[in-house]
Structure formats: C-alpha cells, structure tokens
Length: 343
Length: 280
Image 1 (cartoon, rainbow over the protein chains, first blue to last red):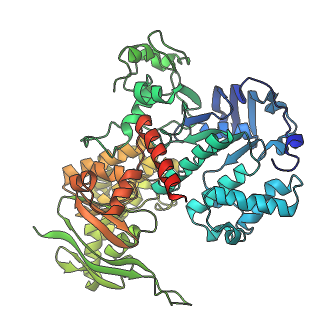
Image 2: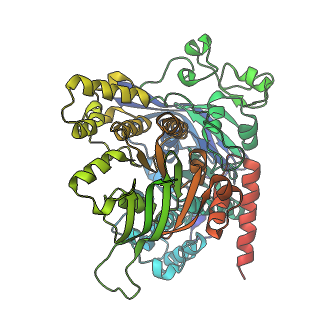
Image 3: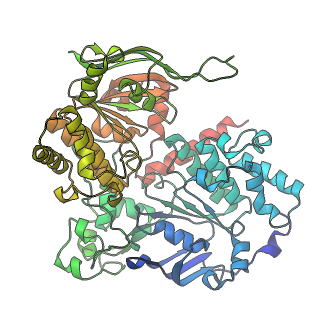
C-alpha cells in the first residue's frame, strides 16, 4: 500500500454491489449540424476484478462512453448515472473527480505517442501520479521502477530517464499501462490499447492485463474493434453500434451463439488463420453511420441481411428473446435464437 | 514460367553519421524472390522487418544499395526516363494510410484520372470522364462522387479511391502496402473481397504486404515471411500455414489471435506457463 492511499480515496468503499454501475448514460454534442447523440442509453455494470470487453467500430460511441466515465469529455451533455463505489460521478465536483483519476480509475489511451509528453522523461511522467498525491520523491521513484519492471520494461533504472521517442511503440504502451497502474486503481479503462501494435506485442499487452486482474483484482474495461484480440481475455462482452449496445452476454455466448446480425457479420468478416480458406469473406455491406446521420428504426437496418420493413420503422429494444438467453436489440433475435445463432 | 517481377540479392542500407563500429544497418539484407503473372504473393513481417522498404525499392521510389529488380525481364534500376515512366504505369501501389495518400485539394475524379491523363495526354475530356467513372463503379464508388473531395469520405471509401487510382492506368502489377490495416473490421473484409475480385476479373498480379498472417492467408496463394530485413521462409499457402519450417514463421503463426474464446483462453494459459518456466 502506498503512503496515505486509503485516506485519499475519494469515494468511500461500500460493501457488496458492483464497483461501477452505468445507468441510462447518454452523451450528446451540439454541432453545426444540430444535436448529435453519440451514446444512447448505455447500461452496464462492472464487478471488482471483472474483465469487460466493449466491441465497436468507428463511430459506435465506445470511446466517447469511456471518456464520459473518466470525466474527460469537453463540451458534451451527459445524462444518466455513473455510480462508482456508490458515488454518482456525474455529480462530483471537478476537484474530487481529479483526485479519482489515475488513482481509483485510470485510462490507457490508444495512441501512446500522442498521450505521452515528448519533452518529459518516462520516469517523470509515470511517477507524477504519486507525486501529485504527496508521495515523497524517493518513494515515488522506487515505486515507479518497480511498476516499470512489472509491466516488462527491462533495465528500468536506465529507462527511467529516457524520453518517449527512445521507446518503441510496444514499450510506450507499457509505459502508459505502468502510468495507469501505479496508483493501484480498482478500475482500468483501456481504449484500444493494442491497436497500433504488432501481433506479438498485442499478446504481451493482453497477458499483462490478465496478470493484473488475477494478481491485484483490478477490474478492466477493454475497448476494441478487434474481436480476436479480446476473445481470450473478456468475461463479458458488450457490442456497440451507432451509440447503442446491440448485444451483450458472456463471452462464449457472443462468439458461439450470437443472436444479433451485426455481431454475426463482424465475426464473419474476420479472416481466419485456421480452417478452410473461404472464397470470399462475408463482409457487412455499407459502412457504419456517422453519429450525425443515424438511420431511423434499427440503426443497423440498411446494412443488415435480415432487415424487414419493421426494422426501418421501429427501433428494437435490448431484451432477451423468448427462446434466447441473452440481451439483443433486434427484431429477428427470436428467429436467430431458434436457429441457435447459426452462421 | 517467366516471372513478372524478379528480385535478386536486393540490399538497402540507410547510412548515418557517427559511430559505425556495428556496421551500417541494413533495412533489406540480401533478399531474392519472384512474383509470377496472375498470382498474389504475400509479404509478411512485423514492423521494422523491411517489408515496406522492399516495396519502395521495387518501384524505385527508393534507390537500393545493391541488387537487381527485373520487371518483365528488364532491370528497373537501369531504366531511362521513358522506360521508367512506362514501368510506373505497369506497376502501381496502394498505400497503407488512405488519409495521407490522397491530395486533400483534388477532387476524387481528378485523383483517379490524373494517371490516365499523364500516360495518355491526348485523351478527350469525355473519354477521360468515362474511364474514371468506369473505375469508380468497378471499385464500388458511385459516379456522383466524382466532384467530391477526399474529406467527404470514410477510411474504407478512401481506400477504394486509392485502389481505383492505382487500377486506372491498367497496371500489370499492384503492390498493396498494408491496405486494410487502418480500416474497420467490417470494411477490411470489403476491401479484401474487392482485391480478390480484381485479381480474378482483371488477371492482376498482386504483391500484398501485411503484418497480419490471417489477412494474407485469405488473398495470397504464396507467402514470404520477412524478419530483420531477411526472407526467412517462402512457400505455398498450404506449406506456410500447415507445415511452417522456420521457427520465426512458426512463432508468428502461433501468436495470431482468433475470434474463438476457448482456444484463446487455452493459449493465454499456455503463454503464462511458458513464462513461468523461463523464470528461475
């Protein structure tokens, strides 16, 4: 335990209940083209030590939602509730929120090159979290060396005084992760942490997150567009499309028994390294809608192979169909669950 | 069979000032391979392996330090201005980043038509327009996109523009440098399917560069694996994926994730155990 860690926790610990509970979260922006709803009615909860995956393509609202949780969205209208350890973060004063960040909840950005300050050393940036909380310089440095070692940065004594440009992409991402972990937070939000990395480094990052959740019970919200990378990591998966959760279930349910056409389409789009070579991939036609231009009815209907007239008019609600056992927002979920999600 | 492209002992060094006691670093270190007409050859490697440098040397966008690149029997590196111009028509490239590789101030129709006009300056305006529109339809763009600027398009559509621009001059060889790496998953599949279609319908020869062995497996019937500027293994798809010989190829295949939670969890545990074993 570092210094006066317990006193400086802003939110009180509370017995039982989820670590984080998001209720009816809506995020909208005022733009020249009118009001844009980037996140529409998001509901989910995270237990201590739980590994959550959020999957979505560009414009799905996954990063906006994550940044809303972190309280780092500027110029957005946010409604709903974000309850962390019993406190609604949306009602928190900025001063309090700031104490929470990096300490109770931390964030790993997608692009470590633009998230790190190029003119400050890695050691300086990673230890900042502690120094801001009045941990003595020597202790902060020791803790930083320890965490750099734990995330797999070799020879941390020497690397401590290196600048970001002296690190490779994978090493920078490790430094970002070290920065996110040094305050021993109970929740880490990782926004596409593997996207710009080579496959080998991706696997190392996944292994690192896995180790953390197992060793220190840190909960992780892992956001990605890549269904392959999080298949072995996430316990529960939420699939987002055009600002909505369209399907959510235990990981195996999503991958083996999906009942939503978008998820099924995503799974079909992925080229495989094993099994038969397909003549063509079952691509989803069209492109994800811009948040300024979300189609009426089911937002996925213009791209959907199952779409019927109903889909263009009525937006489906997220519910468990009669023959199914997990949540899906699709008028044809009942049909798909009878087919047992066959692709 | 005569190869369309023959790369022999290609070397590219990037000399630098200062201490050279470890020698000059070689981005490409003596590689040789051939690409045959109508095939798709995959060139796979992690970042820094030298795969993009190879593409640039082949097209003579970079000058190799030594070695030979032959296109249809003639040495690209010894071509005069006119020969090089006609080579540039026959060998085209699609770049990785569809945002920085399109001129933001040019209209889509002009971007696609520029190459056609350069190689056929006497073409009439109407003919040029027809050819461009034909290209746009071929790659799945709408003719009314003709007068729009790149900023109006998504990543996937921009990559279609890049492909149309490359195909507009009717090349024999298309080099694709990570053409899907920056796209959304559902769009990646569209672009891969498009390249597959172009290969079949136009009899195009493709050199497909990627870091991702799964993508390459889908499109390419022969694969070369690069590491540290060297080709470690080259062979047919079935050999590379089912019976890889080089340890580097084996490790690269083993690490590719699949959308299959049960096998991915097993591999996660496997990696954890092998790491524990390494520690004393």
